Image (tube, rainbow, N blue to C red):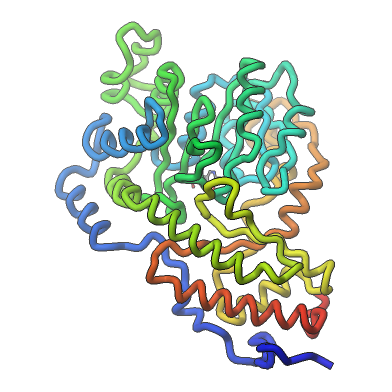
Length: 430
Ligand SMILES: Cc1ncc(COP(=O)(O)O)c(C=O)c1O
């Protein structure tokens, strides 16, 4: 007999009941195109839409971004992928160099190094889904040139200080992909200020976004110069490389690519950046509301809201309802979605990278760099578990969106109460 008591007497929407919220209204719309954003774009449009050097909106944004991260230099590009590519070029990755990287991340943390013939050595995850220090220690060799970390979903890498010390002790580079972690902090420092270089995506969904764009930051002028020549030519290198740099003579051409940003994108990002701290504060408030409301469900493992400043690119739940109540994750998400909670997501394009063709068979697509396929890498139980359990949702960023959080809480409660009180009920199975 299915128990319908204790506020669960409404039929679930997946069983024909009335959804908790109209999904066409409770959406995550990002970025919000405010009057200020429109004005910033209009002003930029009337000023200039192509900037050859580090003046104008590029200079303004780069200076602010560097200062915010307590870094000497920042350098814009047209995408996070380009900035990550520049980061690898900056450290002069050579064919065969090994780079330790998270097995669980978005592919672009790793994929640009393939252009340079590097060998990615994948490391397992900790229970936040971030690169695991234990596995780094197991996999580091004399061929390791660098370690790259991603602060996944906005949660800073817990072992970043140990990783940083290891890199210093071994004389290798630490690189950070901060594409999820704009404004996040741990041990009193912002993500992006631990490594030799850090890169951020400014793509449409990111907390500071220009629609498309990327930026890197470093304190090291030599690394900065190489990165600059990788995606910029003529004016910028001519102005910025010092006269005694051995690379100065390449200023006119750079390394052959032009990957510079669009001024309108950076005008948007610059305006968004004004509000980063407010966005994070509001997200933190909503994450805490969600945690308080969902704490009672023992099959939901909730994110930690205390031990570091998360930027809440996503609110991540580890779902354990299949073991506890026989309800598959996919089925749980389907029930929530039917209640109108359409932003609940099982990530598709972010997952384990070790079996992707680019990382196993680069010889078939980049034969100039790889004479044969790469050794197959397996055995990432923690990353697999994290992926299998993960459910995520965006975190709303404006105070006038609190009603959406209330609806999401109501939707979660409706489905979770049903599962808890009926030991899965009709949702059991696949
Ligand atoms: C962790 C991570 N790294 C890199 C990127 C690539 O950034 P972009 O899309 O700006 O090239 C993304 C994009 O989603 C990302 O999530």
